[in-house]
Length: 192
Image (cartoon, rainbow, N blue to C red; front, side, top):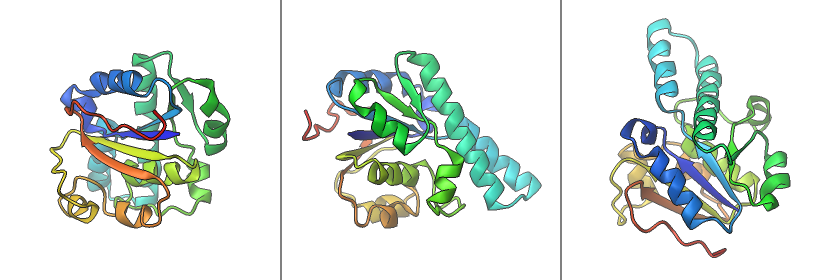
């Protein structure tokens, strides 16, 4: 299984549809789960938290709802993709040949003990899902420029990936690829 995290900024940059087509083209014979970033919906949560000063727990749940909204947006663009909410459902549907879109289940993530903090965004949630679903590869697609010579700690320091990502993938059993959405060479996984 391949987990592909699509940064929320891809919707704003106009690259989202192209990325979805790249996934279809490059990984058509693999089990694929798309993890959507929160995009403009998560940006609204950040702004509302600054204005209203509500706690990180409320912001965390609202940000998960933002990811669910992006899952619906992706499904609206690609009706043949299937929304899946839980790790068990993803594992059950993995062999169907359908591209899945993760719409995170808030209770499942609460039970996993993930911290409610802006240090943990959809980047780390994608890594958590890749681990929980026993994925072979995690591909994180960003609109930001990616220097292939930078390590994960450097990418986190510059804000390309979230602050908790390095700790989340510390003992990862899957391959990690951080790429720019405009790349012409999407990673070839060992499944292809």
